[in-house]
Image (cartoon, rainbow, N blue to C red; front, side, top):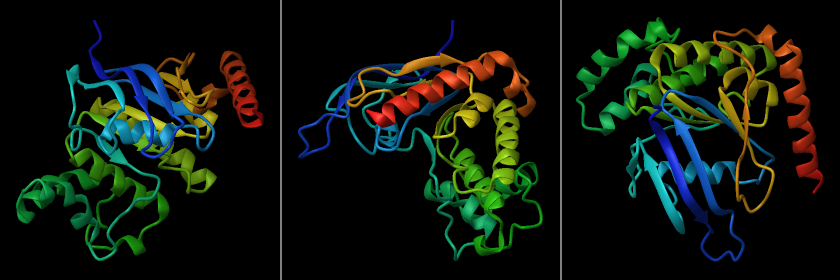
Length: 254
């Protein structure tokens, strides 16, 4: 039986001072070790979901479970990687990567000892003493993901991490992310506007088709693992993609 890494039970949310709710009694389950994407137009509530999961916001109604435990205080229990890398420009790459450990009270030298072996795995060997301004966009996102991994949480939230990258770098980073996920067996919840990206990366995806969000429409990706970008050309995948795009276009027009 699959263990739930994340579960929403009848979760509703309304921002203070706003009469209109964004979520109404939403139910959602993410299995341990899954890669799940959420897609939907801008302003549809994707980022609000992440704020609720991380504990930056609290539901006005309902419960959120992390690893099948009711989690009223979720701050620090979930790894979060935003769209921008948010690397500190005055810290070296190594110092940026060790930051989560230092925040937890690990001494700087010990934190460096723990992180240094990971730099080679993440394709960052030899740049540990450089500063973020000296790295490409893709390299900076690797550092940002490494920092999210170092946090040590089994559930990772990635909020459009590749949206600012050029097309070729983006494809390369998608393949790299899949390799890291398969190796580390983390649970990943991924926000994207890119239907191809969602289909390539995910086991399942959820599409937001209404506001307020009352349910997330589930779509299972018809691809086995391991997979390559060429697999997106399979007829059954193209069919799913076309249906998803139709729904998203309808949502924007509405």
